[in-house]
Image (cartoon, rainbow, N blue to C red; front, side, top):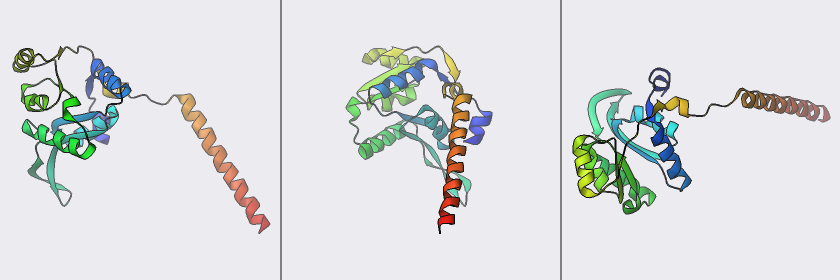
Length: 181
């Protein structure tokens, strides 16, 4: 997570961030489902405020990668992941939304009630049009980290003052209690 935050600057479309915010306002859980490794997906999902995520998992033995894949979150694997999340959290997939840019996600898109193609590859665009699914075009990539609100210097200073005041009050109270004993 540290390396991802310090070295990699993932891009997210501003329109996608707005769409996530819209789902949040409507009370929907947000779930990130990706074929990328969970080591990369987890911090991005956290930064996006996702409730859950599903990603490819590698086998780890003695704190080392073995080179084997425990779960490949790709194609039908994404369906398996969302069905598992659905069962665990009581989601009705016919009421769920899914967004993708690749025809390889056709199984996942077909498994939900509200599929949408976003900046789709040719094959997915063809399928989406044939099935009457919405096709969205996102054009404004922005830094993911820039979308995460950072506390203002005033907030940080005020928090420090409150913390120091609490510490001082605690120290004074401790001394007074010790004197009474």
